[in-house]
Length: 122
Image 1 (tube, rainbow, N blue to C red):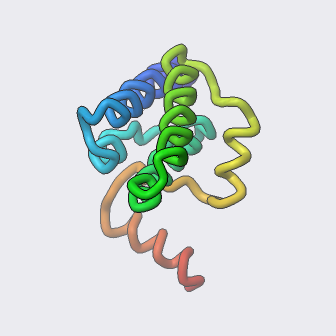
Image 2 (image 1 turned 30 degrees about the vertical axis):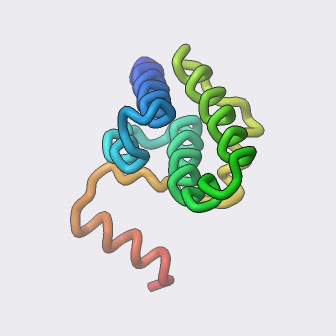
């Protein structure tokens, strides 16, 4: 399992660098994101990319914010490029907002329905 995490972390590093260099969009990176559940580092990196996409309007208005966010993502990508785990404070930063991983291992009717049931408390 550790070997898979190492490979997946390196892949995510490449995806983040490709986003930062405008080779691919954030949505393309999220689509190609490894579906390996259980690694808090991968969850945090996924959330960082989601936040990048969500902050698109703010990034256009505030160059300082954009530059800080880009440097933060670059730091994450550099750590992942070695296959290393992200620091605990980075992981905890995202955990406080998301109880479940946003990464879908399978996109099918059952998975989507189960997620929806959780979100609307059925």
